[in-house]
Amino acid sequence: MMLLPDKEILARLLSHYRAHERAVLAQPHDPALRRRFEDTAYTLCVLMGERTAREAVHAAERYLRRARPAPLAPAAPPPTSG
Image (cartoon, rainbow, N blue to C red):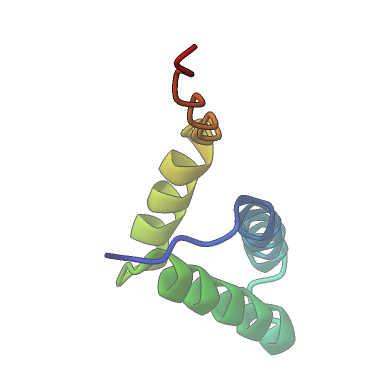
């Protein structure tokens, strides 16, 4: 059984990943930007249990699209005899 990340944290990480990706594309020779992008990609891979950033992004998007499970309803009280 795999533990799943918190959806809010994952959504924030995915947003950071995309922002870093855009920054690296705009300034491909900036080593600090590239390092932040790679760190974010690595964290996304670890959280999603995937080997590549592309696979991790797709897995995160699928996971975030899934609806949260409905809370369990309390059990009905046993019938009373009377």
